[in-house]
Length: 433
Image 1 (cartoon, rainbow, N blue to C red):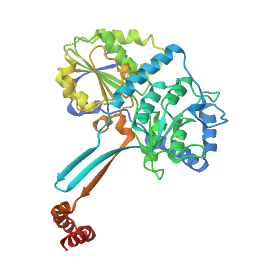
Image 2 (tube, rainbow, N blue to C red; image 1 turned 45 degrees about the vertical axis):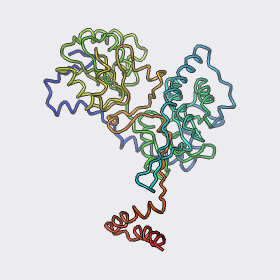
Image 3 (cartoon, one colour; image 1 turned 120 degrees about the vertical axis):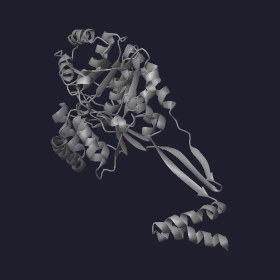
Image 4 (spheres, rainbow, N blue to C red; image 1 turned 90 degrees about the horizontal axis):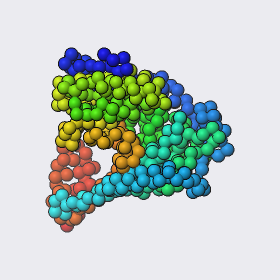
């Protein structure tokens, strides 16, 4: 066993112990909720003044204005950065534009026509975490599909710098994607402001974006409150699971594990590898590359809570991955393409030796806002459809009602819903005259 990360042999585990490996680190939501709820209530009651107070307290910024209009700024990053952002935006736009779903119209039986039409979510709030560095990648991942969907009001919230400014890269992306308003606030207070609205901040219908445990708690509380707001998906700490075989490059494996571990001490990096592979070169690479990281202490703590699982074969590795349902799944095996059909649960999959997870985080075109904490079993990552609603429409002709009406009368009568039956009967009587 190497001190940097736990090494576990599947053959030495019971089924119960194997299932326990899939359990994420417990989050004390009761404690977090008790911290977040007073902030939410303060913002609901006091609006802008509460936002100013919390931005001063948490971000060290004294705000003159809480919101800004991106159109008022001509922010252009330095040329190299601008070109990188533009290229990433083009790929994200291309991939999400291809996700348009055509309206459906079908005659289920003669005279009975059913449709499904698409409409954008009218107003959306995009949360872009700040902290140690701005995240222009998240601004792109959320603002671009909102723009493609045609959302009328797009509000972007992100913590300001200590001098009360918004990073130039965020301003540039916001302007290019038609963001309506930027809120200079982060944390639970920003989520509450978008959910309820304030004197200067519009209320939104749905909130998107990752964040720390307080942001996540605020989203969870508000979607079940009288704020009447939806959220994109539940999210916990970031995670990656790498499936590799003896053909994989140890330096690539180590780099992929560390790229998640550096997110924070609560991240989880897992390697699942068959016993035919030698893990010593991988452990050596982990140690070597870890020492080169600026965020090595975060990564070290994350690795101490992570593990390498040695399985009898690749089939067992795939089974474990489906049981774990990772946010990011990297497959570095000789026949990676052929294994995709075996994957049932994952937020996003990265195939082969030349596809680091970082590509999806920034520029390949797929969205990096993904389900974590095992939610990949029942949630998809953010997509164009996340910013859309689907409305069904139906129309019956006279003949359609004559034919299908008696069926509905029987079923309504079966359920004891007299008025439902009568709504059909009164029309059938009219047609029989």
